[in-house]
Image 1 (cartoon, one colour):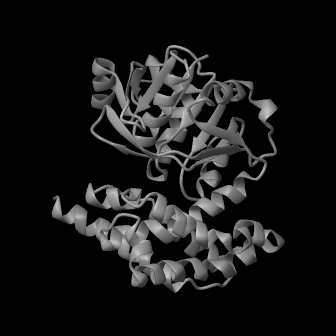
Image 2: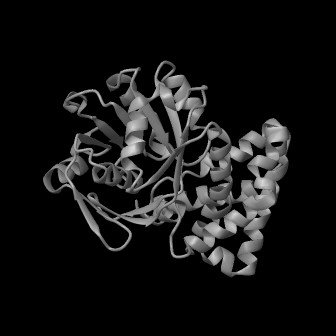
Length: 321
């Protein structure tokens, strides 16, 4: 079975590594930059697993500009790019992957399904949300910083039986990674987005690892303000489903739990700001602000952190000119 991982950032290397560990040697990694593809083809990828074990894998790597280098149709594609890189990836998929081949988008935030639905109306698209975390160390190495459940489902009413290649991959990877099918993927996407919208911007604004948000009462209060502010929006969008999104009030406890479990980790927003990259703020707090406006709901705290992160992006880019 041919598995294609689209994106060679931290999460792309993580999923490529576990796919290799599960015995799938017909593995291709698509990179944005030609230099990274060449580096991977020269030296392979290295994934530091929990317990200090270092996994070395040798996938084929191709750059997005090398359309003719995809030697065969993938039976399963895993898209692990950030939302800021989504549009060119959709164009590449439309040109290179047959519509009958399943494509799983494992991404943070909300709103990407609108772009995907418009760009790939006939493709077999699935969505994933993962609790796994990783940090990339250069072009060819990443370190696993946390594992958890990766939930996958369809927003178009598809079932797990409609993607046998995904089912096989899930079974093969089960000893190493917990991947499950859910019929409530949209709710799962919202829950993850709420968690990220409460944690990520604050870690970037105050330049702290996740755990500090639970350690300092003032930061915890700011995080709680972001959480509380979202409840009227969730009620407006989800109605009777609201308790399932908020997990009967336990979602706040989960946010605190994430801070504790990933205490030493730096959020992706923190890392993006540090390295002068565009953040996914528009897919998190920005998405909620725009969605709330449709319901005439104001989210002042989310408006502030969105604008503050955008300001940090501008300042960082200006410093590097």
